[in-house]
Length: 547
Image (cartoon, rainbow, N blue to C red):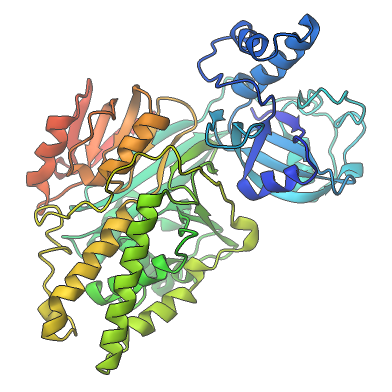
């Protein structure tokens, strides 16, 4: 059962607009530190009292009550209204997508946050009936529960420009909770997971990655179709954790098959990492090189999917601090930040510089393929999200661990595309073979460290790492991921890399998605993951887990 809330943003005017851009709501109280470990309202009040020692007892209780609502009573899927100060006749309405997060890197007053997917930013306040939005709440009331909208249906209607239906005569059964069935498919050296969420008598389907290195894209696509009983149109959300072909090339084949068979999605959401602000052309450059390496005619997944979507295709690039809803389930994005830390920035910039030099050298010899691929990727739909889909979270650089992110790719790690890449089959002059290999490795290292890392907003359920490297994992361990146990963990980098000691995560089921080419590297993960549950490789077949 969805709840309904109203949250007022802090001073100065314009803070609400910033919250819309960042895709969050904020509980103010800048003096209060992290309350995520508070188990009840009494403990929250103790934190508030320590932060405001001169505050009257009644005021402390008021603050603690609001922070407790923000921490523990809000849930992903609840609706939230936010009055707009510069447009006082309007309010924004969205759905909460993430759990409470304390962001120490954010400015004071912006550290207690929840991720929100904003549905509408221009809902007339006059459209809400008098009992829904109390226009006379005291200024100290920043987080209010809208009791007149017990199941969120009134805010939902207003967000979709419909009339306020008034109080519901009946409410949903609050005991009916969303249940997930996760299938991690065997696609060899690649990745593909299906999350089926049952809620309210229906089901939503989210697919995280689909591609393979050692299997043809057609085969990865076929295995996904078999798992969906030949009905790809049931997919609601596609998540691509990063731009390696072994994570999404199966989706390209899926779109081509659907177009040939006349199948269409009713509507579809496409999610991927946000391109870095410091080098926004990096992703286009990466796709340009990847197209030469893979030989694929088109790697623009957004354009391919749009052609087989009857309703809207919503593409949202995600960064740290954002959240997203898939079915009735909320997810928090932990990585990458919109503003990259210094070492990742240098890694990305170095990769782009190498790419540009190689493209210029090839063009000087009459080979414009790299430049042409870059222009095609830069102008493609995948890298041109609608402005209202572009949410940001700015992260301070200061807390990033000072270490070298440009780790060497060892040959056995990347037997398919790094040191073992067969450049002789590519249209590259012999004297540029080694240069091309160096560019490809540099691009892949940077791309891996911008993988989308996300977890279920309900603690202890699911976490996915994409191909994030050890430095990113160490940063997450020191900042977000205290020792915790999950039901399901999708092992970083297909389970082929060692885990840093600081990453003390365990899981009932940890799955490494590695096949025949990388199976011998599975021991690296096994020897460094002190797991209370089971660590299994997808080479042993598809794995299913009911959450």
